[in-house]
Length: 299
Image (tube, rainbow, N blue to C red; front, top):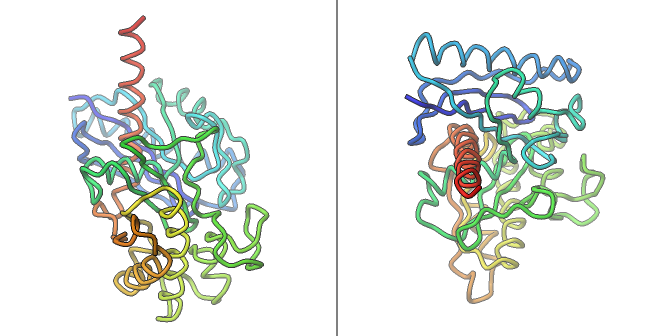
């Protein structure tokens, strides 16, 4: 049986797994990113898991990885040729795709982690059957992926959907991108810890409400601009804060979406939970493989 080697890289942790062509994960490993390491050291962490999963594919599951799919925090260049995640400072223009090809000897296809989540939730998750929606990851950072008229938006450089850098607090906190008041600078796990002095796993009620309201405010700007009526949100902060976060986000979203075409906009938790980003990475691999097959068929 053919499977996808799926890789999800966030600011706090990395995950590698094996995914069936139907979206079912049959194995996975996770490891925190060691921010004390240099770029090669961080890649070494990833390489160890990749090699382990390739070995488990053959020896334990008796399956054959045929393609690699990667979802990575951004910014990045097309297909993860180079990646520069704001929350992994050791990686600046790191040649991720080439390095993974050297290790796996397989075709490697990559995209932003939140765009990967959009693919996953639209395929077998909360947005299944919808042609227009936004997916968000609220975790160490804040990212987004937008599906419009059934197509995942890429933008000029492949970085479309960076809702984490929508301004929600004018003259607010300085963001890692260099601006002020970005959603990521105000509502990410990193920001929450800086503001409160406590990890986002130990939030107060007020922080959960504030985070939800800011996410709703940022999402409203995108929904109003792009005529979207559905937002699905994953990530450890959003899912960890639960109903308090989502109720506050919905109230804020409704407050700021007053035009007739967005008046019924809804925000909902990612149905795939913490599996979503890895399933999305697998979906990126499948999409890349299918596109390559079409090009070959037409040549």
